[in-house]
Every structure is written in C-alpha cells, then in structure tokens.
Image (cartoon, rainbow, N blue to C red; front, side, top):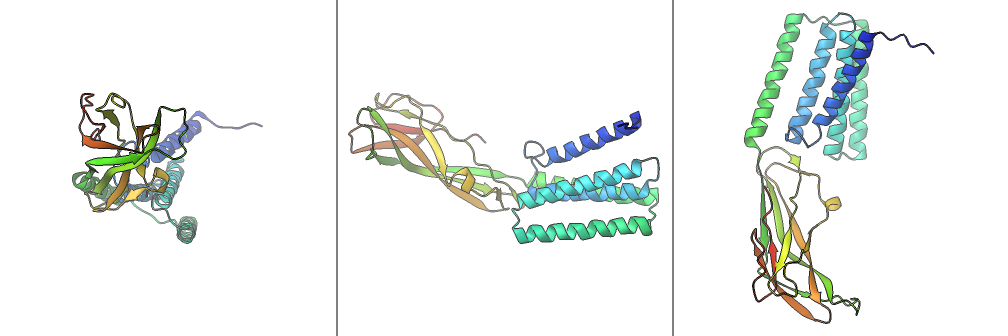
Length: 276
C-alpha cells in the first residue's frame, strides 16, 4: 500500500498531534492550577477561536487544520466537563445530543453557505476571546485560596481487638483522633485535594519513636472529586495505634507539632502539621 504523504503533510499531522496532547495535558491538575469552570471556559474559547480561524483562512490546508483543532478543543472540553461535573446518564445524553446538533449545523453551514469573515474581523473576535481568557485567569488566580484546618482530640483511649493473635507483643487498635476541614475560599469550583498527614509516637519507651498509620474517613473513593466555591469538606482522621497485647485499654495524649520527642511519661501521638 502506497501512502503518498509529503513532508509538509507529515509535519501538519505532527502539529495536530502535539496540539491535542497539549490540550489534554492542560486539563490535568498538575499544571495551571486553575478552577474547573475557568478551565472549561478556556477550552470552549479555544474551540471558538480555532473555528473562527478555520472559517477565515483559505490557504493550503491551514483552514482544515484549524477546524480539526477546533473539534479537538471541543472534544477535550466535553470530556472534561462530563468527568469533572460527574454528569449522570441523562446529562451525558443531552450533552452528546446537543453536540451532535451543533456540529451538524456547523457542517451544513460551511458546506452550503460558507460564511465569510474578513481577517480584520477575525482578529478582533480572537482578540476579544484572548481578553476574556486573561480576565478569567486573573480573576481565578486573585480569588483562589484553599485552607486546611486540623482539629485533634486532647486524648484518645483505644482497646485491644478481640481477635488479636495471642503470640503478638503489640497489636494495632484503630480510633478516630480528630478532623480535617478543607475550605475553598474562592468563588470557583476546584478539585478537592486533602493533604497527606504523618505522625509519630512519643512518650513511653514501649511505643516511642515508632511510626503510626493515619487515614481519612470517608476514604478517597467515597470523597467528592470537587469542592464548590465557599464550601467546606470535613473528614475524620483515623489512626492505627499499637497497644500491648492483653491490655484492655490504653490512653494516648494527642499533640500537633513538627518534632517527635521521645522523652515523656505518657504515650503520645504527635501529628505533624500538614504541608500547605
């Protein structure tokens, strides 16, 4: 099979591939820590900008490339909205149906009427889109703010599990030791991210210096993926603490500090402040 693809066409294909990769990477939360509605708006404005460029240009295959990029931006926008807003089956149906109607209408218009947009008008339109994008990003950055607050109990009493193996010197006991509250101080919906907590044990030599396992309840798969502007999310902090086998109950003091000092007389759970 003979594929007659010249160098220019190959470079065009590579350019489209890299552009699609950049769009998909943009919606990930590892770069450009923007809110969800602002990212969605930027993607939609990119779709409109490439669409205007495709209608305006009439040179080589640049118009087709611009229309392909317009469609790619819309697909990424659509997937991002569906995933981030966790649309139900009915919502997904209407979104897909509306998108089908939109693109059939655009295709029909381009094939039958071929609207004419002068380069000057197209420049003005795209410039307006860029200004709107800058304003959205500026408003998002200046109003952004996520705060976390850890509130711990003064003490916690744990009991040895009833099914503890008799040959173990220390057995784990789980208990709720406090709460974590994450607050979205900005007006836009953002991805919900809870910080990792670490802790250590201090006090009696029996338990001092050891690491302790901390977790949240509800677990990550039960937590929402997003947090609305001005809203708060609270999760319980649970700890797995060692207790001498055969001991009915053991009381731990709970403190928040960065250092874990071993000296002391009573068992102490030291929770390190979360990194912000």
